[in-house]
Length: 441
Image (tube, rainbow, N blue to C red; front, side, top):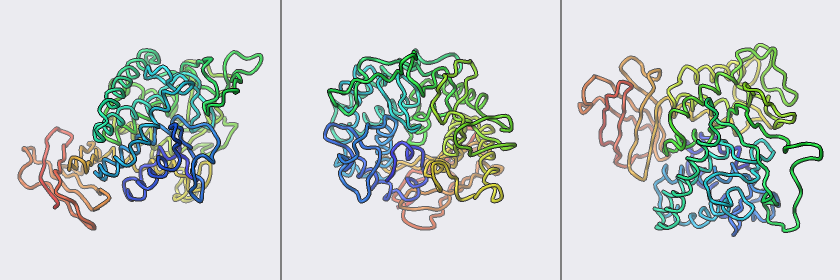
């Protein structure tokens, strides 16, 4: 089985073996998505109908699959392939708007019960699932345009704009984004059983267990990171995104875990460094927070590290990666096995996004563009040299910053294997100088 919400994080397969990754989208939408739009977040092997997986859908996994579909389309440029899958992808978005689902009132905020990668349900708006939802809406609008589904594209844009404003206005606390814990009567069974009316609040308690409320969640901008990777830009205000990433590092990074307690699984300990999944710097830690809150996961560390780089916080991102690699140094732990819920865990493949962020890599087979915008730390003097992969070709790009307008042959691709169709290649150096050429073909 795969797990859609865990595979939200991995970026290695999509960029190195994109045809294999595309086959997973076929399974997600053509096997695991029911006619109603409800998606199974686990794939049964041998591959059989998702109807056999009788469990609630995962809000983060389902919206992440829409983002992944957009990513795959962008990397392959095959609009006919997208059109074949689009009807099921549209249903996956529409499921969010169904009665008793995540955003039944279509205001752009997920208020409903949101099962997620922490193996629990979040109740009420939060930006972890919310930024994935906003990104999915933004991606869906572009894919709907390509599929000539213009009315639905406009609907997605309207819901997106409403949600973008609402998340920022209602959850921003001046430093980062909170979860607003909220239980509505509409939180009936998301699987549609009419006789299902249990309360998520236990007797004698005032709110559901396993939330994070005013906590500083390391994953709170998960969808924003994915949007950077997929070339979709910002879904929340840029300045507040940057402030949030600074807050995550400030509150959740531990250079030494000797005094840290985790009653769940222990993936980092003693004098090791690591990024906690959550902390409560403003107080308000629930009596029963989500169970993994005190753990350290490499997949989330890589995601946060890459996002820091995207926001210009390169030193902070590198520090987090160094902490991961120091723990998996070949003596303390296997450097090739960043285990989590099992060995060789897929979430750790978020590591590829660190390379994408440092190099500023952007490839679109749709537009025929390959662009790089390296961070200063990715430069070797005045030279930028980096591995690249488009799926059909891989090799190295080399560009020299000479302080001019960049049309003098200082940009080259060394294609080691495969073929690259005629592509507009550009490198924008840290000082703003841009060099570009038509290459490939």
